[in-house]
Image 1 (cartoon, rainbow, N blue to C red):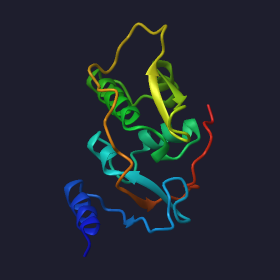
Image 2: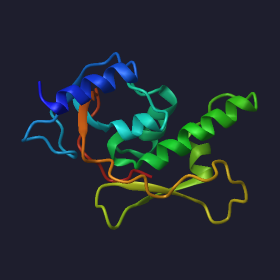
Image 3: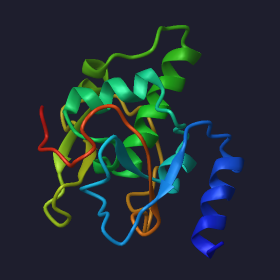
Image 4: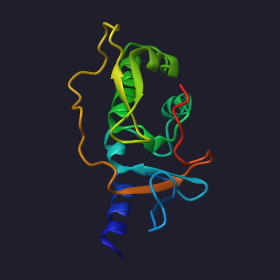
Length: 158
């Protein structure tokens, strides 16, 4: 077993993932995973996301018309933070339009195909504080998971 295989097994155990994960081959790229799969990173798991994707998380990914790996880890932090805030306030899960009210998802000009979020300049409410802007290298170790939709990178749908 390679070091990468051991790391993938550790991810499965540590995050209690019950969907099959696959290592990328030399022919796979982040933006073109094998048919029926999508790319993912353990960095996103550390942001509070789980596989398979929670319906709330999947609804936001689908709302923007992209695949999960195209969104930077901080977007997932904001999603999880907003979800927790709503539940702490006794509200139901936020819908994608509510997430979009708080955060604007933008194309990353320095990293084609990836998107980041910023607070709308005219919104006075700050939902998640002190999130570092740069989580570091998060695309180096990626893997694939079963994904019914097209796993290829898409243009932003909203």
